[in-house]
Length: 269
Ligand SMILES: Nc1ncnc2c1ncn2[C@@H]1O[C@H](COP(=O)(O)OP(=O)(O)OP(=O)(O)O)[C@@H](O)[C@H]1O
Ligand SMILES: [Mg+2]
Image 1 (cartoon, rainbow, N blue to C red):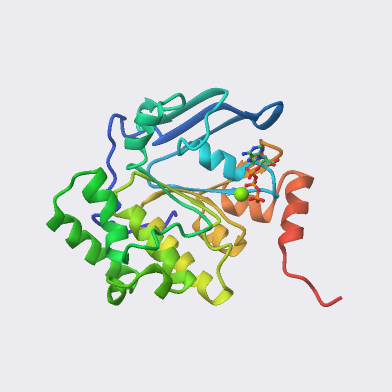
Image 2: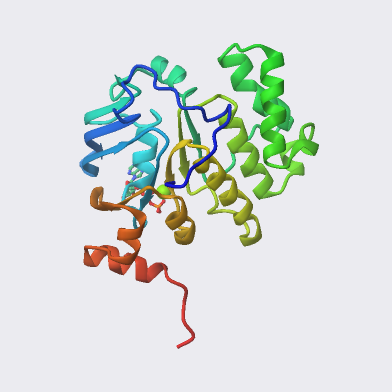
């Protein structure tokens, strides 16, 4: 977001192994196949620190596959994924386990542990995986829960929460790991319309606070507001890339125009 003005403890930029002008994430010539089916073809893009990249494209274009490659849930055939100065494209499962502390991911289905309270769901990663001090984690959890107005639900179980509340807790749980990059794959797709807004507003707040994010969404008004860059994917190829303003007001390809038309509200005629 261009008008970002504030920052906080959960999203403070950290340049790690990079110099300040290199992107936090650089994907180059990534190829991903399932058997003979090439799902991602020569995908290259950068995500600068503190910026939001929105990934748009029709169903089956490869958006989820790309997100999954960036979180080590899929292996890639070739290309590089340089994250925070290190090529993680061929990282081992063991390396991914620690990388996932710094690359947070939230999916369409809130994957909270049903047998754990909200607080235990949030504590698990920071305390058990990151071995951080309990007091510090508790303090951060309280701040995060307050931010999403769910402090009263600390001791509730996921089944006692609405879909929108569960999804906000899933985001809080990822943020409690202090990620450098957040990946969101259609996090509002399975929510009732009245719950979509609160989740989108949380993501807008994160963007304002300079969280670096890659967001897959079908919410175009939200995409317009949150995106620094839009990537339009079709058949595993990035067909268009540019600012949200350029993409939405002046798409360059017929395919992107058709996509935007197909997503516009239905008319009465
Ligand atoms: N595990 C898998 N094995 C084989 N093919 C797969 C697998 N996962 C995805 N694909 C194929 O890869 C292509 C891209 O799928 P992907 O889920 O990434 O699309 P998408 O852009 O996220 O679509 P949607 O908008 O519907 O979520 C599709 O043709 C899909 O059938
Ligand atoms: Mg998908």
